Length: 358
Image 1 (tube, one colour):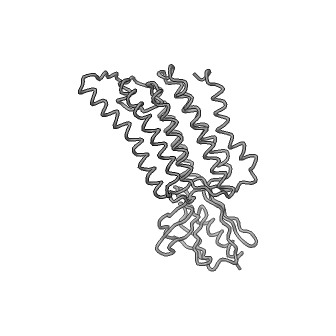
Image 2: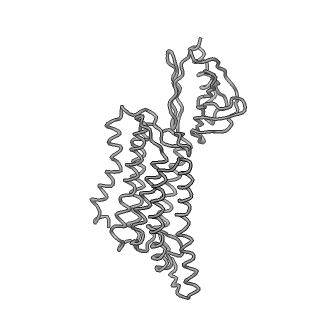
Image 3: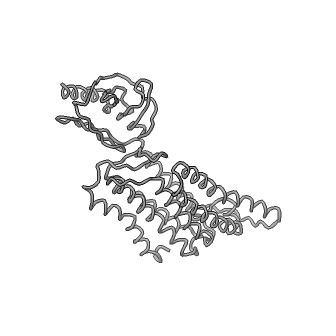
C-alpha cells in the first residue's frame, strides 16, 4: 500500500515540515520564546523555545504521521481498504501542521487571533472530512470506530459507520458555526458537541448489537490476537511517556544580570526583563508558600507564570521545584519570586543582584 501511495506519502511529509522551512527562513523575525499553549479563556499560558516551536513541533507531528501510516499499512485487514480512506490518513496530520504552525507564527509576529476560532475551524473541518469518508471505511483494526461490537460483527461495523458519518458531518458543521457565537457560548456548545460525537457511535453500536441478539441475527467473529495492535499500543504509550517526561523533567530558568536590568529566560514561558531602578524591595528567603497556579507552566522541575498565595495575592513566579530558597522582588506593587536550581546558586544570584542594586 505504501508503494501505491509513496508520492503522496512523500508530499504529505514535506507539507508537515513546510512550517519548519518557513520558520528557518524567518528565524530572526520570531521571538526567542513563542506561545504554544492557550487556556480556555483564550490567554496564552504556555511558551516554548523558538527551536521547539519551529522545528520540534513539526518533527513530532511527522513522527506521529509515520507511526499512523505504518500501523495502518501493517493492518492485514487494510489490504483491500478504500483508497480514499487511506488517503485521509495521509492528509490529516499535514493539515493540522499547517494550521497549528501558521497560528503560532501569526501570534509570534504580533497578529491577534483567537485560539478558540482556530480550534473550531480545524475540528469542524476534520469532522466533516472524516464523517464524509467513514461510511466507505471497511472493517479493520486501525481506522474507524474500533470497539468490540463493530470489530466482532461486520454488519454492526457498516451500520455504525454509516450512522457515525452522518452525525460527524452534522457535528463538524455545528463546530464551524461556533465561530460566530460569543466565545464562552461557543466553548460550551463545542464541548457538548464533542461529547455527543464521541459517545453516540459507541451507544449506537451497543444498541445495534443488542438488537441483533434479540433478533438472533448476530454473527460474532471472535477477535484474533492482533500483534500489530499490541505493538501500536506499546509504541504510542512509549511516545506519550517520552513527551510527558520531556515536559515534566526538563527545562531551565536562566537569570542574566545586565548593567541596568536583568533578564529571566525560561523554558516553556516568556522572557522577562526588569530594570534595577524599578525594584522597590528585594529579600532572600529560606522558604516560601507557592500557593496555586492561575496560569502558566507547572512541572516536576519548573514553576513559571502567574500564581496566587495568601501573602502576595496574585504574583509572578520563575522557580525550580527542587530548591526551597528563593528571592522575592517587589516592583511597582507587583511581586516576583525566583530562584536557581539549588540553594548555593540562589544565594549567589541574590548577592549578585544586591551588588547591581547598590
